[in-house]
Image 1 (cartoon, rainbow, N blue to C red):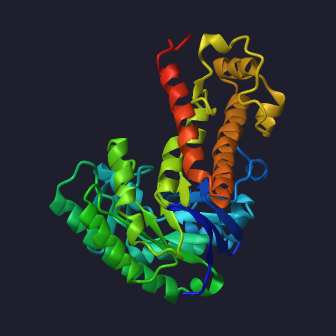
Image 2: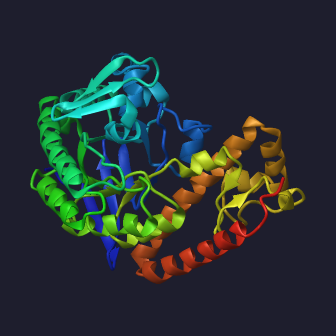
Image 3: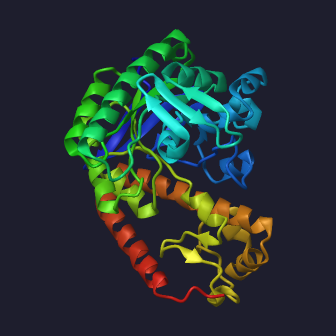
Length: 384
């Protein structure tokens, strides 16, 4: 496998790296804003660049249903279609196997879905998954996997792990037959195993033997308590190669990201910063704030003093609260830009701290401050 990931420095298990893609380098640790339908909700590509996004995530399952991979290929691929010139990672659709449990049937060949849009039957197997992502032109594609629910019986998780490994092998063959590696497009496999550490190890070792350009840790943040989520990551990273990127899928809060970086993870995605923005919530170093709370009605401060994004440079908490209370679309955009910048800036701080050797103490202090503020906020009345 050609070298595409440089491990630049470490502090304990925390890693500072650089992932090369066909659309530019991604400095890690990195956070990927989620653009499920080919758009990060309430933000333009230019705004994403301004807040420091290097790579975004889109969804194979949803883009397959509409507008369809053939149309996207015809119009020049997903980058051109959505006017984003940075890197794009597309997930496999495997999470929909989990989240759309009432609409699907799993066999060893793949997954049969009933479309959540019109009820039409859709089949997604390893080859179909690779065909779709090749048509989209993903810089990083994800192998098809089976994400078991939580809690699950050991025998069911064991079956899901076996199927995930077999599908990963088929995906790797198909990706090569489609000529994607020669185009500089990477295929990542996904470690499953739920909360069973031994199954996590077995899955990781089996996937590493297949020699993928990168590895993800899936099946976390699916309803399990936070300690179990962190334990699942800790049970996976030691068995993944140091010279390949490690991506924890679908997480998490700012302190969770720092704790996972401390466990050796490199990449993350989560809808939390954009989804909470649409509900009037903003992230700060002292925990999240709910702008619907009446105490912000006359608050003339920015969301975060000294944070250099468009929202914090120009608008007060009072004005942002006004937009939220009126249901104005601008409020969603301004809070989305702030929350995404907060996450991306946190990753930049983490990279700098790993380089300087101070990550471990800095991250502990950062999390303590954030969690103290979050606990205090939970004790306050919700406001009007």
